[in-house]
Length: 244
View 1 (tube, one colour):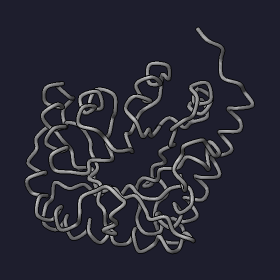
View 2 (cartoon, helix red, strand yellow; view 1 turned 90 degrees about the vertical axis):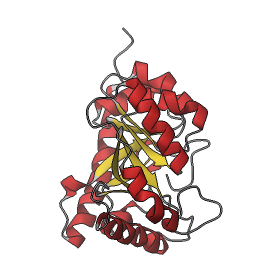
View 3 (tube, helix red, strand yellow; view 1 turned 60 degrees about the vertical axis):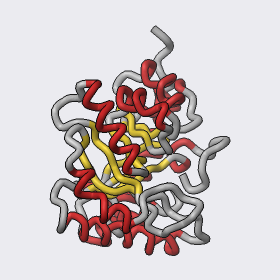
View 4 (cartoon, one colour; view 1 turned 90 degrees about the horizontal axis):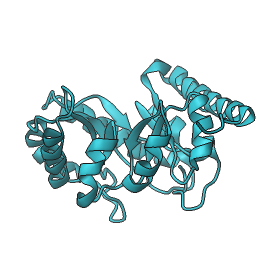
C-alpha cells in the first residue's frame, strides 16, 4: 500500500471542484435547468497519479484522458475512478479503449464506430454495450476532427443499428476564440443538430458533451450535459490544450 493522499491536496481539489460545480449551478439557474443534469469530467491529461489520488478522494471520480496509453498507465492505480476517452482514438488503440473506458466521447468517423461495435461485441461488454458520443465538427473547421453534420445526418440510422454501442449523444470541440461568448454559436448549433436528429432517430441519446475551462458556463447555458474541465481543477499543465 502506498501513502494516503495528502490532506491539503484533497482539500485543494475539493475547493476547486466546488467552485466549478457552483459555476455550473449558476449557469443552470440562469436557464432554468437542473444542475444535476450536468456531469463534470475532470480532464486529467498530464496529471501525475499522486495528484489524481487526491483528486479522486476529493470527489473528482470521473476522469477524462486524451490518450489510451496514458489512461492505461493510470487506471490500475486509481481505484474508484471512472474513465472517459475525450481525445482522438487511433484504430490500432481501439481494442484497448473498449477494455479501459466506460465511455468513448470522441467517435469521429463511421469507420471508427463500426470498429468499436465489433470490438465491443468480441469483448462481451455488459448489456447495453459501449457508451459513445459522436464527435461533430459543427463549425466545419478544417483544423478539427469530427463528423460533418451532413455526414452524420446521412449515416445516423446506420450507426443506430450497431448493436454493441449506445449512442449517448453528441460531442464537439469548440473553436479557439477571443471570448467565451464567441463560442456560444458552436454550442447552440450542436444542440439544434441534436434536437433535429433525435426527431428522426430515437436511438440517439440526449447527451451533449461540450465546453471546457474557458467556456463551460456558456456551454451549460446552451444545453451541455457534460463539461470537460482540466485547468480550472488541476492548473496549467505542459501540453494541455488551451481552454481545458
